[in-house]
Length: 323
Ligand SMILES: [Zn+2]
Image 1 (cartoon, rainbow, N blue to C red):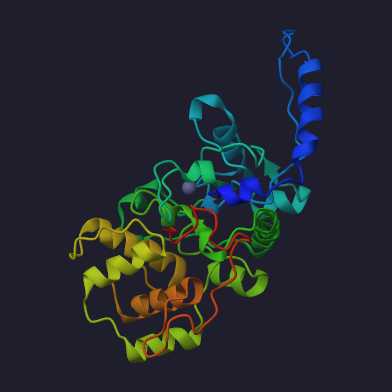
Image 2 (image 1 turned 180 degrees about the horizontal axis):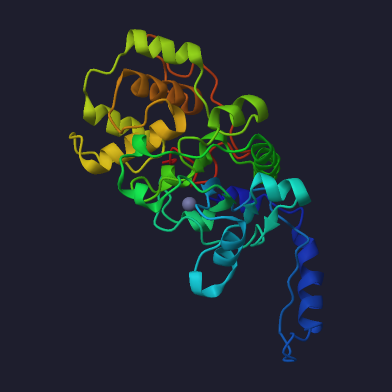
């Protein structure tokens, strides 16, 4: 809000406006269509209070090979796209080429019905990277429980390319670690990509990409605040981290899907959707690390908050939502 005092006391730029306004009126320019416009845009006084519209980075796997992926992500009848497509390792080995299919300032159609940290328009607020990986061998496995599917590994060379591309995007748009997510995080139950073989931990450790809990913190919460079946508390903490977790107090199908999505991301040794002590401890450790959630027995604010965007909360759509 701009205060009255602020306006009355502000004289620095006002004298500039009169000549600018006069020249704007006298120099109406022609639009592309040839009709005269009665204004011109002066972009010489840009505000310091702005940032990128891109807030999230979303990883996917294609579930189809290079050629079909390119076709499906570019041709109108499929209605899907992503900003980038990273081909499989064989094609990358031949050309080193990553495809940009949608400019970063434009909206790609990759997330569909989705939610993350209060935001339901993930397509509008994200960059999407599709990675060529078939997921699992047979569509018949769609019907199998997640743990019984034979997931394909991601090739190391391909991961290296994904990491370099992601690091560039994150730096350009100042995307915080907890907003670097998978399709399954933003659409749990509906989507399972990039799957439990996606190397989240390697991306964090080797490339400083995305969120990952500290081992010491996980051990602390396992020891000091073990999960004892408080489903409502777990649902609340999943919601606090960003997931669209039901707040029912019962472990319904939707809640299991959210837990499985969380496990595929942060505890890929077991992702059956069954809450357990380790899952809960990892969630606690992430909330402490990225949202300054105080550790039991420690005063709030005694640990510095994780670095976030330059505005550090001034933008009204940062998470947690500012009052
Ligand atoms: Zn996807």
